[in-house]
Amino acid sequence: MDIKDIQNLIKFVSKAEVSEVKYKTKDFEITIKTPLAGNDAVYAQPAVYHTAPQAAAPAHVAAAPAAAPAEKAEVAADDSKYVVIKSPMIGTFYRKPSPDKDVFVNVGDEVSIGKVVCVIEAMKLFNQIDSEISGKIVKILVDDATPVEYDQPLFLVDPS
Image (cartoon, rainbow, N blue to C red; front, side, top):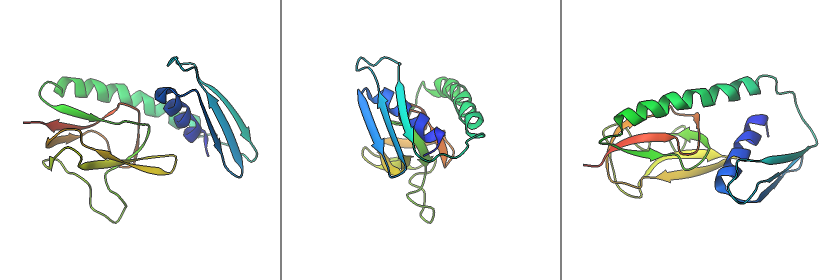
């Protein structure tokens, strides 16, 4: 588990409004405690048995959140007649169920309630994201295999 995974886990736990999460593997153990009131204070107490230097990771993590506000501003301008499908979690966005399969949806495709539109991988778990609305995909706002934040817009859908 690298520093990026730990930071994503901390963000996920704080958004989920749980009081404590423990994650343990053969070489690694982490406990994350948060106040139940939804406060932003997050306490991490990792117990690392084997670590490797992660010099480049902090620069990469700092670059990802900087791009998110620009995307949100762009989506806000288009929001008037379209409905946005947002990410329900932090993770990596994938348009395909696996590298050798076709994408779930393309621009111009019709979606209905319950249709899988993408997969978000978080902590080695692949979570299928279903459409909560019926309509036509107008725009895909995220590139394949890129990190996404909680509540980040993924698709614009024309509900008409």
